[in-house]
Image (cartoon, rainbow, N blue to C red; front, side, top):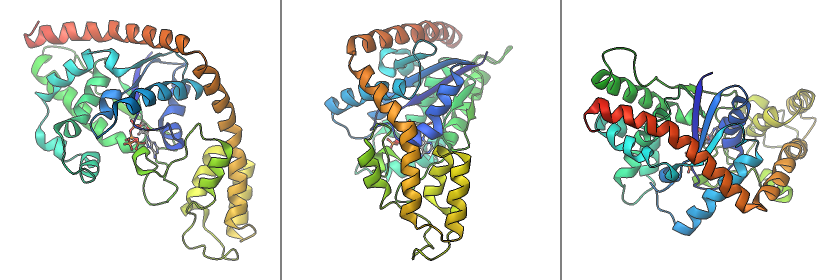
Length: 327
Ligand code: AQP
């Protein structure tokens, strides 16, 4: 059984991009592998935020994940700050991470360009991510495509630490692999950039049906389709990408034919998508309501998850400290 680790920031609501790119894969993997999943609240403080919002969003993220099918009885689910070993290993990895590698990270450059002043935490974000993964000596990391570069850095950090402190036998830290899905990059509703919590171009996994429709209706489609009578190209349409994720194969085929022949306008196509999304999203919304109604049960599940995680994390750190002469 492989060890799988992945995390998600409570920087906003869980959206369809997170779900299709990563979380749906978490749900599938938890049945077969030893899975550890984490709400990474310490990553979320690398950009400006309000403490009360973060507290609420962390909780809502846990509820959304469980509603989406992450089962705390089957996998280990916890909040990052409940396991202090993450920050200890983060500091240790800072000492084997070249500054130039951090400055080259696309996500850093993109997020830094949106800040007035850039804090060191944003630069060191991928080092904490490497610590998250390697603390559990995980070898598989189900993520979306945007995280592949960070994963490459985690591999580099594992190699560098192993070369210095575990050169005498088996590498202590495995080099973790990204586990990608066919829906590894979901575009935002503006069709301009990836769907992203901080870009305001998302559909939330728990959004009510009418709100989903209000967002789908004006969403970008094939840019070359100006009039209803223009034939479209489904492969370059954002809405078609969502059809492939949510609609049945027959529906996807019907959509493609009607787009290419201009049999349907974009609104007709979006109505079908709205219905197919609702088939997936309605049960998730219902489960979220049930879970949120029993907060004490949620606290128990998170405490049990953190305890399991600390057992593994603690054992890793005993070995790390010993090999580094800081025991
Ligand atoms: N648009 C996307 N398509 C596919 N996968 C995606 N992921 C994020 N956006 C897409 C994947 O979701 C997981 C959790 O992401 P995260 O919250 O930890 O960080 P992120 O990638 O930075 O997500 P956001 O939504 O863009 O958040 P902000 O705006 O706060 O940075 C990851 O596996 C990610 O790949």
